[in-house]
Length: 260
Image (cartoon, rainbow, N blue to C red):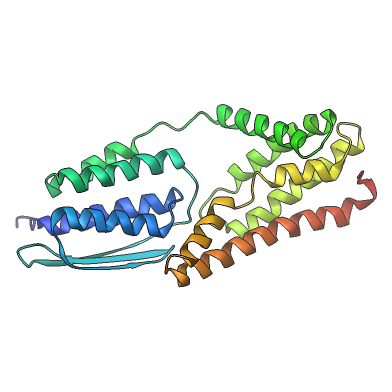
């Protein structure tokens, strides 16, 4: 029995849901994704386009110019932040909308864009350490505070990698990561590597605060995506609260060693 040949509309909708999924995972706000979907659909002349988009699920339906109708749905995993990947995906959406290549080729084009090389872990870690050292000095910390930030940043970096599994909830992971980072800061300052525990803790906490998700949530609220904005804002609030809980537990256990 010969396999059933896919229709052009099916290839196109599969591409749309897959590129949209990757854009959201890379940190795009939903407004940007909706604009990309509309751009591609307009480029191919699709009719009766319907888009249902949440941070965890999306569904797209449309009709080809000849009247053939199709729909595709896909789940969306937890988002991360990869602005370099997002830039490449956004450029691909513009290219597809402008050139409208054969739908059968779209999957390969997306795969080609996704085959990028991440920065080596050591380079990322060095960048984080340098950023945190500068931030500690900007926040009024001493040179010793800036020195203490480095080992705490290293601990926090590898704790985040350890809890990066999709099966581990980000709220739980944040609490454990911040507990470990705060405890390390307390001990380092207590034994002389650093002058102010608060400065070190505040500095490294900025490394894990969900800043871009907060911006995306507020943008959704002001761009007629109230449901997504409220859900995303609630998630950001819980993740931020979990950071505070991790810090509070560490302060409660090791409070007598804190140096302000």
